[in-house]
Image (tube, rainbow over all chains, first blue to last red):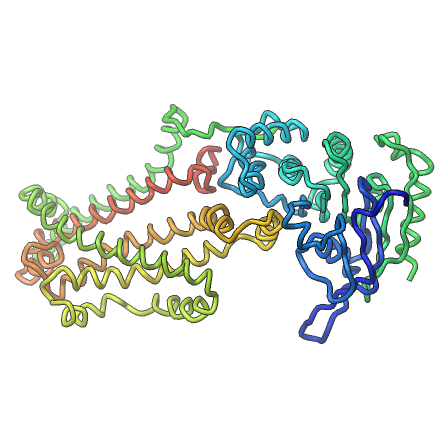
Length: 258
Length: 276
């Protein structure tokens, strides 16, 4: 890698105390991520992929090892608002309109009225929901709500986007459409956003990423990192390319390797 | 992709009036039929006046002195509202403190849930000794205690209702505790708050009237109901009860109207708009 890493994870472990004794969620994780990369974390339940994402985002702390984000601690990066987060559930506020939901982080960060609503409108246009600014979340479908969640996460131009199975609750067709949408939005956002994407769908990981980090459980560790050399921009023809199927097979075989 | 999009402002359109009528005519019909059966039963079975007066007799007694009944009713209603205001305000404040000091919550909440099983109104004679059995203070005290606990439980539950994901998002924005409270916890608690206020509006009228049975000023509704029953003037007694019902319902409707104003986005209103 010729550019300095934006995220450097060194010998990180995470152990939880539980009723039946300590549970090792992650052990000896080492990973470096370059700015602007799209990384997927994939693995079966219990492999620690969501935990790793949370450690990066300072939503949990490692038991051992170090994580440096843009040269800072994750806590400092969080205080500097470097993270945008999208969970599997959209977590939109019922009592706010779609536009006001997108404005939420901007309000917290102290931006004034006019620039705030302008920015929110810009983000809604980016995700294709410019006509739904005055609607309430319950009036939107699941896929649309997730798009609002993505718009909200990108509203303050974070350097890093953390996504925890964001399309997990959607049906297959909507899922594939949202994947294409995400790549378009990622390409269209002003700054070079680094994306950490947690999933347990192999085609999703291969379609979206520059590199796929295959993890295995008990204890959670990195099995392999597979480079995805499919050309960008990627679209529906990418899914039909022979190389796509080769890579999906490669990821699948790594997942079964233990 | 089509989604059901409805106007965010409800209007009194033809369709809406139709829905209202469709919703309300069954209970109205049952009510009217009930009244007719009651009237008929009194005549047919020759039920004596001191046991059960007919609706016609009650209405006659009511319209013989409506302003007097309203005057004494409003006095009692004043006690109910004062107790409601004190109890609910304290309940809200303590709930907010409990969110900050969860240990306090762990102590108070089970105690509050248990208090629902205790007939607080039975404390009326006790409060009469402490605050004066004739004075309104003892009635206000009973109502305040009755409304404090449900408000505390409901508002507390509402304030801690946001999901861990929602709280983590706020954490990722490096939001201050004040922002998390004002922008997330407080709006999330509003449905719970109004739920409590509606329950308490019914409880407060009951509390004020029943505690007046244990003693109170001459011109108060509870005292009137009890004294009229005591001299077997049942039509007058029932007319007092009728006034109590009207005031209780009015109180509830005011709270419900406030709820619609404050929370136009809430689930219960959505279903109506979509015609379910």
